[in-house]
Length: 120
Length: 114
Image 1 (cartoon, rainbow over the protein chains, first blue to last red):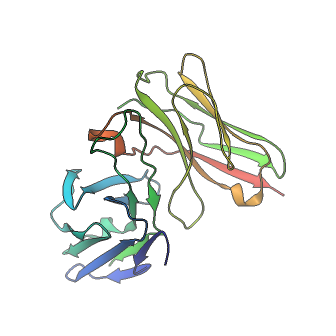
Image 2 (tube, chains in turn yellow, brown):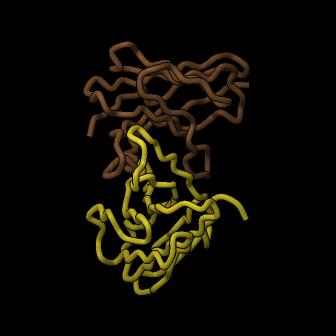
């Protein structure tokens, strides 16, 4: 496997279910991200992890719970979701050069194919 | 964060050049200009980025206005596979902090006609 993979690619769940989305990157990156793309809305950043530490939570409801056990894996645990949470959930990774990075360094983000989530 | 303005949609013919404009009149002196695109049913992919000078890579060229208040993504010969939503995004330059945050707008939907 190369790049960023996400499983499952499609998920249908009821509002009382608990499920998890998985993301794995094979690029040796140290930063990982969750984005949400709802129909007819721009992509929204949800969470950022840098060296396994959460550095950004973009006011995401607690029914979304991220987990980053190591720099290659990122999970999004879902529970008691609402129908309006139906969306495409995208994972991305990058090599963040925070530590002694050269001024002006840029960290291209590599995206996975996404998980299409439907909440009934 | 500085904002960008792009046309909602553009149309092109196959094998012709395409110029995708982006206005960013509130850009700061330390903001990078990035372009990503999202093909149907896929995640976004990086296209190109620049700071002040024009840039070329195998996918596209980026022309940046002298005052940096606008830029243009140039696809030299559009193919059907270039049909996608193209996003112009600004992020601050720096050794850390928020320089890794991508704030996506609605982008430009490019249609390529055969």
